[in-house]
Length: 81
Image 1: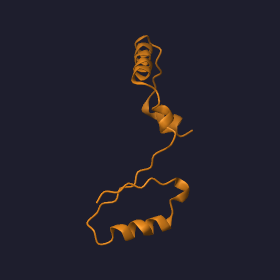
Image 2: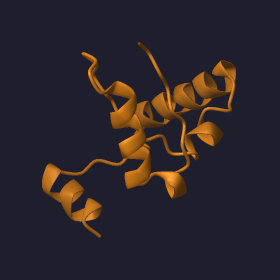
Image 3: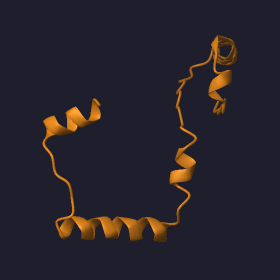
């Protein structure tokens, strides 16, 4: 059996778990839960041509010395801010 449930985060609760458990009870099933941020749609709305144009521009910038470098320690400090 294959089933996909798309549920808004606001409706993800214990009652939903109970319904899924009842659905798979007595079966030899695996359950996978995936969380997808709705903002991903905006990021992926660009065309391949637009994406590769930005990617190539980034590569050119790095090759021209316009990149930013830092150590792992500096990265961790930046992330923790």
